[in-house]
Length: 83
Image 1 (cartoon, helix red, strand yellow):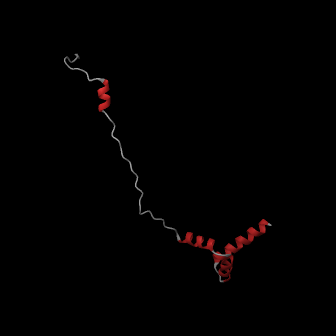
Image 2 (spheres, rainbow, N blue to C red):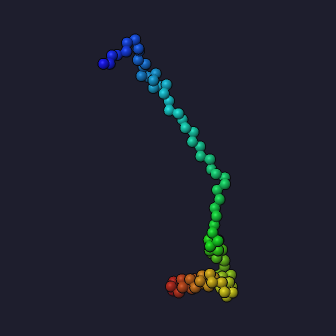
Image 3 (cartoon, rainbow, N blue to C red):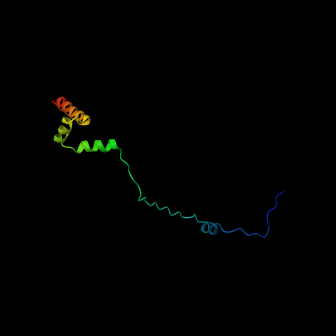
């Protein structure tokens, strides 16, 4: 059997609400200064091919560079289909 506690005074609702405050989290994101990017050899070569002039590509193709030969063939096919 339960009996009420006598002599205890309940705390006012306002006092309870002001006493309980959620902790304020300080979330600061600090960027990492050591982020690095590694580019593969193939990506570097492709980037270099895109920066070359058509004359450089033709010179490399005449020297037997397979990648330059393929690039010239793609450009020739694109020009033929554009006409």
